[in-house]
Image (cartoon, rainbow, N blue to C red; front, side, top):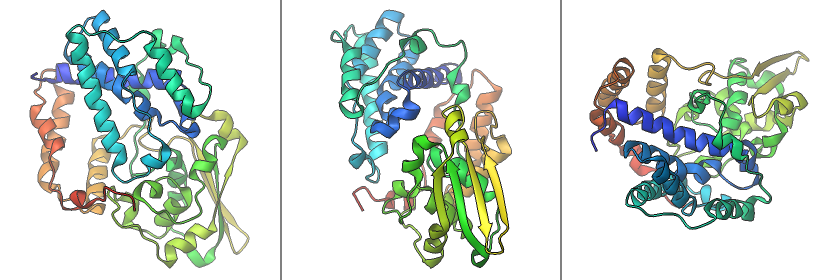
Length: 354
């Protein structure tokens, strides 16, 4: 299928809308802390919506495709998801399943009865009782959910993002002058981000607040390294981690999940303190990055990750800007650029447990 932006971009939006509406119906912002990764639980459905849009499936065939996808959803256990490279692997297979389901429905295949019930039962087998808010999927609220999607400037969990952003506004800090660092987060994900020990994997290094703040305070470029084949664990990092305490905050808990905020207070040995709060970090849907900020993000991440993407940078930027300017531009060259890279570090990323 030849894809111009008038076909590719609506397909991407359809995929986002499917995943986000079903994720909201499942209360995915909280479901994740009960052992189910909402992104994976909805990925096949998002792929179906995107591919079905490109194939111009009618309502009946698209419904059949979604029903087939409900039967193909994989729910990985947390112990599997912490493996390096496992997440992109299972998301890739989910996307393939969605492609297959859309084409199967186009050929006339229909799902088995009670596909949604079976899907919910599979989730409940891991997470316990789940209430599915069908009205969110059926009716929506008249707005595009993709407009509510946040982005991140550095690789981290969404849960730790606001804490890092708030802490960065307090830098620089002298290690010898700092007594303690208090970080407040919503109670919902306190136990997820409160990780006082050094991480043992790339994924773990992007979850805990203590390690992220230690990288930030020590000025380590690893904060921006998307590959992280090596995790800094020197005395400076360990020392900063030991100063950090993470606790829940009632007001932040009340605002969640509408707001994923954090407050950071640094107490000095002198008895003074400095504090900062971030409720909406840069890159959030209500604070989107402009082209200059996106360029800077790309340069920073690829440099810190030691990925030689200089030859592609200008072409990628020009291709993205062209899609904004024109509704009839061709997308094949841009897609080809996003698929290729100059690879030495990416190829070196581990694919088995550390």
